[in-house]
Length: 450
Image (cartoon, rainbow, N blue to C red; front, side, top):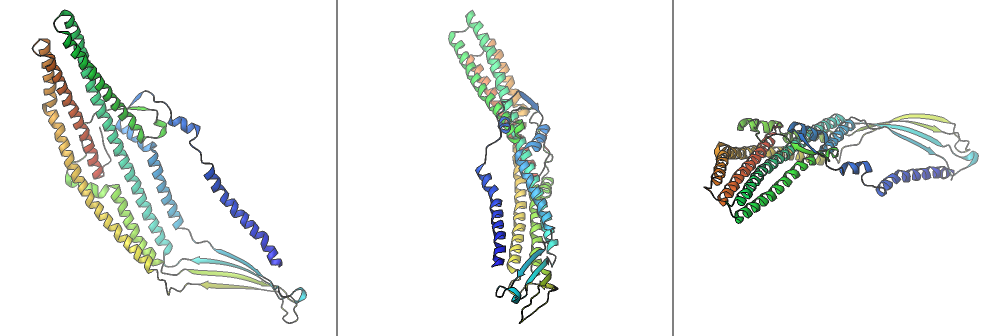
């Protein structure tokens, strides 16, 4: 009964400690709050003036401030912690016990025993070494996956940058058209006052000017949205900045040789490198599972104290004993065949996934190179003379109209055709820039310049 009395406070203490350990989790769940005032002010800060920025500077800010990339970096920290955990030895186990006679009392009580043991388990079969190798391979895979995320992030940001440039060029072209039409409207007003043209011609010119101004506002709005969209790849500290891309879409791929592109893709694409590391980790895991067949040895050292007893039937003096024990599971029923078979299947699966990804990488390179060739031909077609011809035709039509040789409708039609040619050229340039970016993505090339 006294032993039960001694154990009762201990049980109450353990129950109180367990309840205290659970309390913070409940408190956190109940006190979840929104963003702080400083964070809210940072996210809702009003946009400021436009800030010119080059592609290299923009990509540097993307890598330094993108929250998605910052979150992905924690995967590397987790993998580093896994390497540390793989090196740790098992903790020793301490056992303390007490046994007392509860059938007798007083001088007739039989001797009691106080026991203390320390047990240490030693891993055999090279488990710790194989566990470290698996952790290192997984760390390499996670690091390569992070590099793949950064590469795709940079290329996605480059596409957004190119789109903003293309939208700005289209808006600038419409701005030039609107300026030309305003000058034409002013000339028409003077000619109408002089009686050279009718009121109908003047009204038609005003309608065309208003229509082009509406198209200009739409194009400027799209260009502004494209520029504001650049902040999607940056951190919240840049959310109030209105970036203005600087440069043109005259971009050249690093290489157009199919063999070099295929070799670069197979060797350098970080997603393929990550898959190779995962394959190697799966192969090392087979060795780890085979090492797990070897049972672990547990060594224990113990001390026992027997108390004095004056029992008339079995008197006993006070004495101490020390001992050592060994524990080794007998691998009779479980030889870890299931674990080995599972690891072998995962290794085969990882190899097949890598083979399929390498085949797909080759397809990606060939498709990207084909699209690049078509996009380049489109741009060269416009640069070869279509743009000059459109501008020359418009200029001649303007001169002819001023001399009375062309009608207003003919002039406006020439202006529309010139705008269509330039808009098609800017669209072709934008497609060309995206084709170069996708070619670099398929080949695992990081460098891009506008």
